[in-house]
Length: 382
Image (cartoon, rainbow, N blue to C red):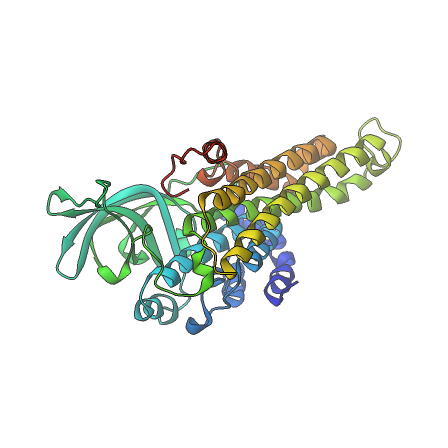
């Protein structure tokens, strides 16, 4: 276990204690934010050149999984922040990275590619207006990122293949209007609200071409950025499922309604608990195995082909589905007690929201099947 993972594990009591308040207020608490900043949880993958811990992909997943086990909203916000700062580190020039992540106190970036904006070319940069959705962590962010179509006046700019020219722009969060739109059954503390920008100037230095090559030469950035974003979602679901198991186990000392002995003595409970354990660990092992294989390939100087990416993509969706299967079993074991145990009930609702993320949907599996058949995936950022 790495030092980062151990430190994340040490935060679990704080996260569990704060979880109910986080859900009620729909915000991470000041104490949790302070602890996450101390861990550098929002900048886990930032290189040491900028004072970051430079977590490798496996360590990053373990930290996100561990935090999510303590509190799903805290883990999810750390995940989005750490992936957003990784994008900044990988694609922007060093002086811009320093401005955004080093010189800005308690820097947190939160990007989303859902929604869209119009970025009109102007002297030195882009004039950006737009509306974006699902900006997890926007309420404690210093930088907000959104995907934009680039225009020259009223004319859309195109790539050589005729596709629209897109840029991921980052603007100061205090220039955005945050809209209170995140009213869900789970992950409430992520405050994954909408935000808008209205004619905000963004210099070219803070505009990312996600289809371009990373500027930072470090090997870690050779893993496709879209794949990195997907991997961490699966790690979060594994952590949430493990948190549900943690919440259930103390309930098994109770005698069920109309029962004669503690639930833990019932063969049915023992069998279903083992099945839930296998589901969590089976999905988790498949995820870490395939991510490790991809990371090993990159470290040996290989470029991941679409087949290698498909292997990781399939493991990502599989891990999330197995986590969901495990939590369903845990609910059944808990029976009525599962409804009245806040931590277990919250984990169920958190996972039910997390499972609907774009990166965990059936269309990903469809694209994996296309690759297995030698057909190109439909998603251009597969």
